[in-house]
Length: 123
Image 1 (cartoon, rainbow, N blue to C red):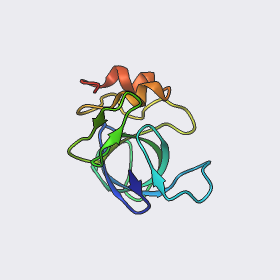
Image 2: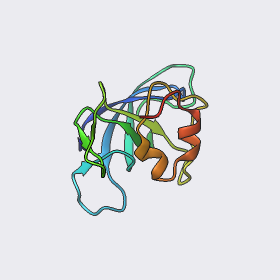
Image 3: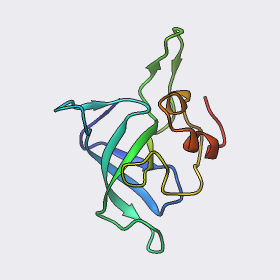
Image 4: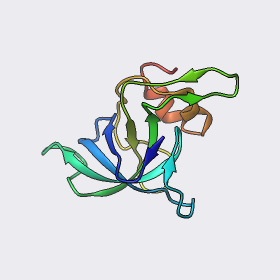
């Protein structure tokens, strides 16, 4: 569960290191985003030799959250950090070629099969 202005770790090799949530497209003025949702972020910290520059606006999908998330079977899942993967334009393809760390199963169920195949672990 992330709110507006939340700082998020970028979990791919697109060159961005940290991003800030600035909006949730298509959801009106909803203020909270959950696992597997597409969000709009602004890159706050980036490598000097990467695809993404600092202060660039991009779409991203949330792959990890610190707040526990209840699944339909009654179990809960939570991670050590808040993380996202940057997306290319309006497509569901990731900008980077690698995804670092584990991701949740809800990302694959939301239709992001490419991100799920690049991840090392799926919980």
